[in-house]
Image 1 (cartoon, helix red, strand yellow):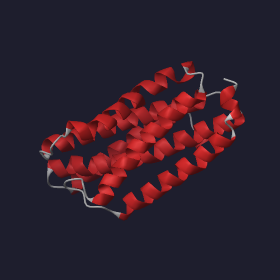
Image 2: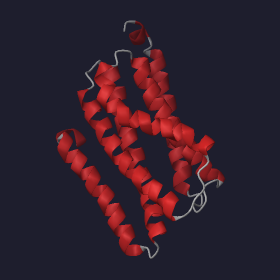
Image 3: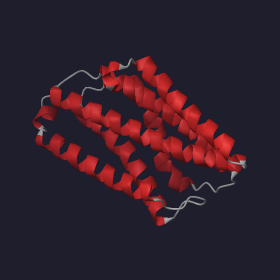
Amino acid sequence: MINNFSYRQLLFAGIFLETIIFFILFCSKQDLGDVFRYSARYSGRLSLIIYLYCFYKFYRAFLNSDNLKRVKDLVFIFGVLHVIHFGFLALSVYLNNLPIIPVKITGGALAYLMIIIYPFIIEKIKKHIYHLMYFYYVGIVMLMTYVARIKGDFEGAEPEIFHKIAFVFLILVFLKFGYTFYIQRKNFKHE
């Protein structure tokens, strides 16, 4: 179904969804800090879905020895949407006077940098192991965000069932894809 849409249509659909998220929250929340807090939360959930789809498309391209053109388009869309998410998150932190602990945000900052750079270098990367490093690192940072949410470490964000479901689902994806990559590791050796 998604394969029938062009790259531009998917990009505009993603930006449209981000806009809808913001608009609904802008109309339903009284406090601007809450608007950006919840916009960041739901935008992050959209980013998770896009990330999982990108990882799946890479997984399929790897198994079928396909080129990464479609994956490149999708990770670019993921990057754009995750930058929008970062904007919501930064404004939430600022407007809600949330503390910034450099040690805790270093891993996330590196993940954001990777998310921004990867679409521009994906076709230059010849070894699959580097693609896997990207997908697993970004995914682990997301996973650790859910761990912190589940533990109640985020100020102003109570743990929700979604966090547990996302945590379990990410673990299952890592295990399933990781097992397949391990079994297919002979493909890594030829590159």
